[in-house]
Each structure stands twice: as structure tokens, then as C-alpha cells.
Picture 1 (cartoon, one colour):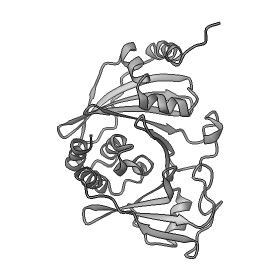
Picture 2: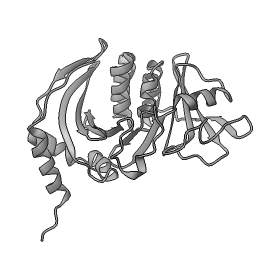
Picture 3: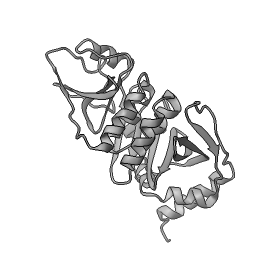
Picture 4: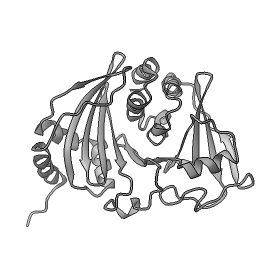
Length: 278
């Protein structure tokens, strides 16, 4: 018997999705505008074949896909095309702008049918997978318990973005200071797994078992504008997990989209970041 290829599997999933597909444009702030966009069998099939989406689906062992929704998000003179596809334990998002594309997967709280690797994620951490097709990262925001523990060993502003994940050792603290974004890395002198461990519950901090150092980034124009976009999203902890890798280029589109949709800020800086980085 001939074995099904990934394309065969994806085509069957497309047929199931298209019958239930809908258009969704809601909750967009005044600083951006959202416009309806047609979605078709062919559009979804092409999206499923892109390297960023394939990388996410590979990581999740190709789950059954549900309904698809699509919208466009205008940021200054830039446009981000966003497609969301539901999964039983989360949401797959494909975002494209200026010829560049990324995929993001956000896990639903308490979902039990995700791959075993992702079944012990700390509650309240907004966990996400991000991929540009070449690199796939796991990131999550610090939980309330972790924020409280971190604040006992270092000063952290209330509007800071604090995240951890596969490309962070161990926590990244991002804060807006005088209109620019400053980053610090908090490293724990103890075993810590961001997929399963929660600081304050599984791992305890004190000033003797942590090291805090600034993370230095090159002053390239791309990173300058990426940081300005991030700085404009102050008081936006909801975007912490999405934005943790943004200054390195991974998740930048998703981060900008999140800041504009959730934080209602930074239109000029975020549009410039798209132009400089993508």
C-alpha cells in the first residue's frame, strides 16, 4: 500500500477546514486597521506547505486541523496578512509581510491532548512555538510566581516583558527605558527546564544562585527599530512569549502584530522595524 505523504495529509485537512472556514476581524485597536480577506482551499493549501508552518506541524506531530480564519492588519504603510487555523489544543498562526513569513503556535491553557513534550507547561505562561522555517523556538512568559521570585533578586518594572524558553538561559527581562529597550539575562545556578519547571515552585531563587547580566545587541538599524517597537509596547506582558526572540529576527512579525493588536502602541516604530528587518 502506498504511504501517504505530508502533502496528501495536508490536502485532506484542507478539505475538512474549508467547509467550516470563516472570516474573523475583531478586537483590533484604533492604531491599526483590519480588513477582511478571502480564504480559499488553494490559499490554505499553499500556507500549509510553507517552511514555517511545516516546521511547526512537524514539531507537533501533524495534529488534526480545524477551522481557518484570515485577516489583514495595517501598520502604517505596511500590511501583515494573518491566517489562524484552530487545533484541538491551540492555534496555528501564519503571518506574512514584505515577502517574509513566520508561523506561531499558541497552546490553550490546560490542554491535555498536545504532544507529551508539551503537557506539563506551567499555567499562566502563554506558551508558544515560533518558526521562520529555519529555526523553531519555544518561548513562554514568566508566571506570576516567577515574576514575584525574580523581583526579590532584582528590580523589575511592572510593565517589563519577562520570558524564558529554548533560546533563553534562563530568563530574559526586557524593559523600556527612555524610549529604548534594555535586555538582561537572569541565569540560575540550578537545573531549570522551561517546559516543565516553574520558578518559585520547582526551582527557588536567591541572590546567591542567580547571575544577571545585560544582553548586548548589535546597533544595526534592524535591531534598533525592533527594540523601539518593543519599547513602544510597554505594559504589554501578554506579548512576552511572542517577543522573546524578536530582536534576533525569529518571531518579529508575530511580535509586531501582537504589540499592535494587544498593546495599541508603536505604529511608527513597528512599521519601520518591518521595513528595516524584513
